[in-house]
Image (cartoon, rainbow, N blue to C red):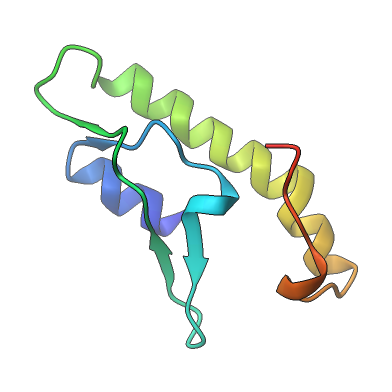
Length: 84
């Protein structure tokens, strides 16, 4: 979520922010990839509401899938987020 906050702070609306476009380095830092669909401010569809909705999607994905997998003790090799 911190990576998304930094991205949005720079005025970038990713538009494809699903687990397949999020990498976690061995040191725990999150890297967001695949910006081919992204838009930047001041394009008309980049506004506070669109960034808020994208952040809500991230929270939803985190709590529905990723947090549950972590609590179950699954490793990255054991999970697949095909539902997104």
